[in-house]
Image (cartoon, rainbow, N blue to C red; front, side):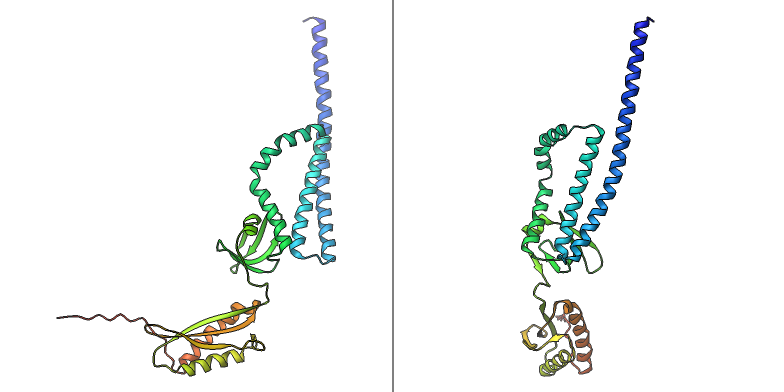
Length: 277
């Protein structure tokens, strides 16, 4: 091998080693900056959340803003790390500009969910701790409103994540917004039973229950329908929204017990078969 070829190979190896060392240092620096940046992001996000809590910001808006600040800071950290490694900002901007259309099309649903979250926070059809029902059949207590999704906790302690886009554009039933709800219960008794006694028993049970609201609208008990084999009695009264389920179930149990004590019979479906000889 000639001396010039050997020198050329040596120069290439030396240049490669120098470039590797330089890139290794940049890469190591980038990793350190990434770890420090993520640590700072968490600290800043927590501090921001504490400040918002101190200023008594609404929980719905608090969770949304906290998620937004966290995502923005993480993007900022990633850009700084890429710049440190050696990726030029002009290249980053060019790549982002070229990919913006494709990303927008791919994330059209995600962007719709983001817009839905903004609409929910502005119009406030519900807020954290409200019990809602959606047109898709989901129901539960709102525990968190994030940038893209809303989290519900069901009565049996399941967590449901619903996209904000569908919530903002769909039908929502808010069971807590007004503070009070009307309870409608129906009870069937057999023909021949004393309707007035049944009415008195129900009203007495409601009078003993302090959760029943009687100041503005008094409870009413009336015969709603006369079915084929029963008399259907309906009772309507008002309670606080938080007491809706408990009052209803307690009344059902008490009515069942008291009706039995006073000889009020419940109807049973009968099937009569006539045999012809």
